[in-house]
Length: 349
Image (cartoon, rainbow, N blue to C red; front, side, top):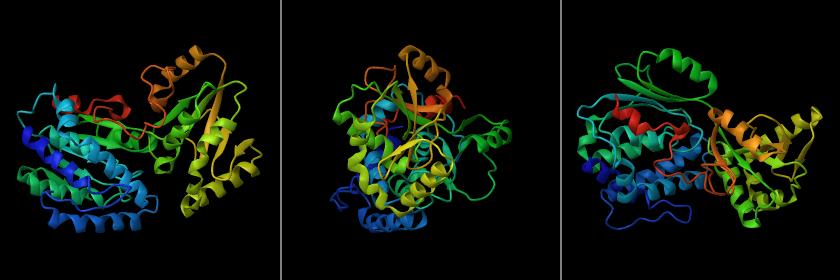
């Protein structure tokens, strides 16, 4: 276990050279001469292959993982988990909505002592294989434990699969004979009271716009009290106005706005973000849905009933297990997707 932890700590040190503020080669990083320039190239490849993967979004992801992969964090995360006496092969089917979105599952499998068989999304194929190769260099025991495939999955003992609600039905049928974790669509919400500070609403903009809102931890819906004035909300979003300069985001904004206007929907917008009253949780890009509430206790019951659709709830001393404004994209290693403890699942196989 300690060897595996040390390997991922070294990977975290390697990733610490890549941040939004700068990309800078450091001293005393193992195998840096072999991997630093190559990984810089992979960043360019990832951007070219997926226009949602901007330089800032990729570097935000890398910086987040470099902060997570510390000796203290990993040791705390695995401290009460048993080490496997035997190694199984765990297949992972990864999504591709944000950079390295499947890395936590990859980490969980390897840190548990299992082997991993990875089937990547075509939208995110550049970064992880390179990082896996780095891991194999710093800890040779991983050389026989990491495999990537584009073929039909065969010869595996359990599976972790992430996809849409539609693909989840296929996954549930196809993998029903194996231990599995099947993840479906989830979205994140914010519960506003009208008493939020300017700073809290500015922080909320990070929850809304990071990764263009494509992540399951991205806030796609607001719950607001009846009579809520959206001026303060829009003021909090305003410093993200440059997002409209991204051509793909702008195209989605224009398209969705045209659809709403032709459908005669009521909406408010500020030139780069639209808000629309809607009971759904999943909103299109450049759009936030909202819903009014009159009783906070009734809202709590609704959120409890819809828990299987919700990844995160952002609020300030309103909801149990809430997340602070601006923190949805900074999960800890023990903040599991869909609330399913991956390490416990892997320990039982």
